[in-house]
Amino acid sequence: MVTAVDRSVLLDVVTDDPRWADASEAALRQASREGSLVIGECVLAEITPALGADEVAEFLHDWNIRFIPSSVASATLAGKLFGAHLARGGKGGRVVPDFLIGAHAQLHAERLLARDRGYLRDYFKKLAVWQPVVP
Image (spheres, rainbow, N blue to C red):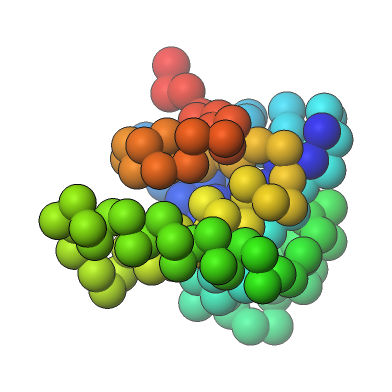
């Protein structure tokens, strides 16, 4: 099973988030036992400031996370679904990376490990979204 990992889960672990770190780390470990972990450009770019550019490669290696570049198909899917978001009255700007991450996961993995705020399940109907559970 290939699991794409969202920045929210990785940042929980990297920053030792008081509420989410344990749940996100447990979910990451479980996903790793069940298959492979992947990320794309948006996630890599968004975790780099928290880690530092020199430590990103080591972090990815330690967690056995593979970088898989986006494709024309995933970027196009993100744009299509972002357009639907705008047509429904949604705001632009900051949410574009969320659509790129969701589309990348839908086309390059079998599921996405993320703290979903609802838009993933709403727009990415074919994407299996797995959320860490805080006990």
